[in-house]
Length: 148
Image 1 (cartoon, one colour):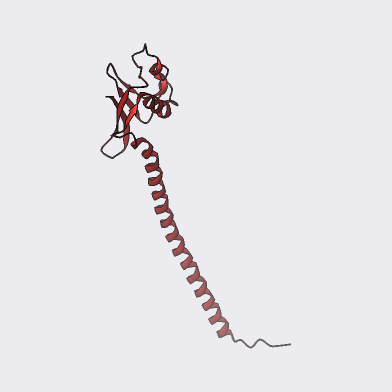
Image 2: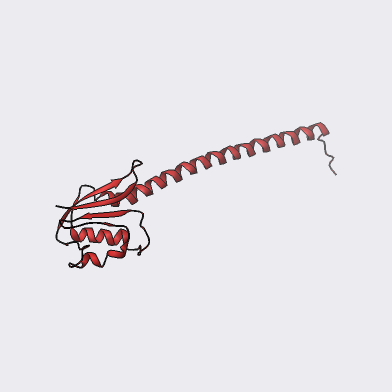
């Protein structure tokens, strides 16, 4: 049988060294976790900004663009069609024709914009100039279409 030749002092030094190494590894892990957390926050903020930019890019295309009345009708259907009477969409669409001016905040008038006897009628072949309306924080509030 072999006898253990490691003295008690050596055992205590090995235990102390192991404890110190374990603490160093744990602290390095915590530092890495904090860095990853900050990196994750930054990446999420950039993704949120990119997502908002992509959402707004579809609306920004109307700024200064000349469109037909059917494009205006499709725009109203697309952005306001899911909102019923009594609800308000996050953006409005203002349409100024040669005869009337109307502001649409939901999809309740979609049937009437295609009825030529109604005041909400938008002539599909008419030409309109689009303008995106923003607030002071560069948030899109609505779109204006003016008949040429």
